[in-house]
Length: 378
Image (spheres, helix red, strand yellow):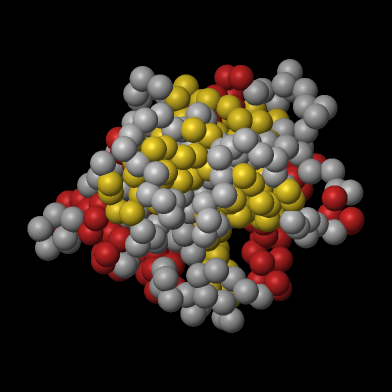
């Protein structure tokens, strides 16, 4: 069944619990070529299937094929591939799966290659709310001693529908580098593909219909439980942070589950879905005129009275995606509620995605300081 992908205008095929996208028909009309995670939800490669049907045939072995193009004669594929710490590179691969690949690029510097990055472990976090598990990336140092109590940070990816638990170069590569810094200072980090993330089929994607922030929070709390039960994490020393949808979820976690997270950093967060992009929001919460309750139960500003733990808000003043007004309205609401454990950091020169290196540095210095003061080793 074809459905419109929420992150693009293209058509994407969701089948079972894996996804197929970027379908291309060969020039002779015999084959459909496509990108899929059919064999493993976190690993994408190029596949083909006969135009009249049949089984998917895997053509590449990258486990991180991001984009591809089929040559005019149908004999070769130009593939962009990556891995956790290797940004996108180009290779030429035989289109029938029988030939060898030829690497065309390696854009990494010698200095970057020499860095000792910590590879994420791919784990399954058992759910206490449905029969199954939540896929996650877990970062811990090689010499980690689970017999001792450690602080932990949950990172919450943005967009809602993004998949971040995969083998490719992450969209959140800056955050992944920050996670490595946290590891050097005694933290562990968990990054979950909570319900609504793409890559796991239709039911997973649509679980948040009319209740944004609710199933996702259940999954994040299960992530906390897993850290405490299996990884020697101190339940009183867990922080949470994320940007955009991740900022929204950070607010929902602090407001709706007070005491569960000792501190949170909400970056460019949506605070009231009535304020956000209609095309995006109405697909999930319907029209506000006919389903006001869905907007009310999904908007953090409605739960602001629940704040008990330390909150940092960071937002670009000229953000034209999630408006700076969202954070300022919440800031004023917290003042009216007589809260005293929140701060805001505005960035006058930046929009939703920062472009100024000084802003990125300042933001992450503030996040690090927040965690150091609330959950770090003192």
